[in-house]
Amino acid sequence: MGRRAGYAALVLALAVLSVFAGLGLARFGYSMLLPSMQKALGISNAGAGQLQSWNLVGYLLTVVGAGALAARHGARRVIAAALVVTALGMLVTGLVPTFAGACAGRFLAGVGGAGAKVPVLGGRVAAWFAGRRRGLAAGVAVSGSSVGLMVTGPLVPWVLDRYGPEGWRLCWYLFAGAALVIALLAGVLLRDRPDQVGLRPYGGTGAVSAPGGGGRVRWRDVAGSGYLWHLAAVYFAFGFAYIMYSTFFVKHLVQGYEWNQADAGRLWMRIGAASIASGLVWGVFSDRFGRRLALGLIFLVQGAAFAVLGVGHGTGAVYVSAGLFALTAWSIPAVVAAVAGDRFGAAMAPPALGLMTLVFGLGQALSPYAGGWLADATGSFVVPMVLAGGVAWAGAVGTALLPGRRLGSRDQAGAEGSV
Image (tube, rainbow, N blue to C red; front, side, top):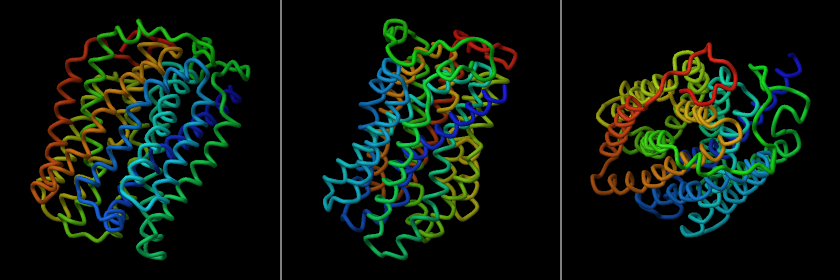
């Protein structure tokens, strides 16, 4: 048991680092660098949203293939290769002198981010952790995004202050170097399933059903599930709402609340620190009280966080919004990943999560451009933030309409098929 727990902890640590590189740096680092990039490249708010949308288009086009590749060839190879692509994308973003080149870099980073996230949350969590520990494990894994906020919040203002207007390029180089190191660690240390090292899934007694490579993807069983597409529509709402908030959070504080970038960055860091346990808390909640109840409550809280920042005034509104978001920040991907393992089993969880993330990614890809366009049209980010809140509340309604019973803590490992 001690060896099994130790290896499970190693798998979780690598999962956190992979999400940190693929999303925490590549996607959320952009939010901190946005004001400096806008000045250097001379782009509008719509252009800034377009840069983020290119990242999300790359993510969108890769998620299904990443899940299928992980099921076929094993997650270890896919994750390591994806992190190399992520590093390349961030390097290109920092090197190129043009807006078009930056779009290409953001696209590559999105491709790599999908290749890292889907096999981590859909494959490794389902393979290494039994059903009654799956929400907890997915919750820990998504905390890599929080670590990204904690790192970029203080690092970016320090680099910009020390190296001036071009310091944003150095930040991208540093992010790329970190991603390459993590790719090496994942490639050397990660294993696709417990039986490769003589172990069983943590929290259960059965053998894992996930192939470590060479497994055939049963697309009819996955794509023909009405439940999958219903949940995917709910996931779309989260993608659209949260990315609009996170992309323009710092810019809205600077432009709408008249904060300086250093103070906004420090708050972004505090959100990261406070949110690091959000996925864990809500993952455990979903293990105990059910995935559907957890998702519904998260959506209600996030909707309030987004709307408050839009309609509120003064420092109090900012801190209320930040606190509510930190409470729930990365919890929805954790719960959705747990549902994928519950419904489809460890073998088919990566392609199932890939299909759901395709729809989620469509919401992410549309959101920044729409938010930037609305900000240019109205002269502020009030309307985008209120829109984000409304879409999150629509997600809560969609969650309430999901069929099926809850998955409780007394369900045994491998309780696939019940939610």
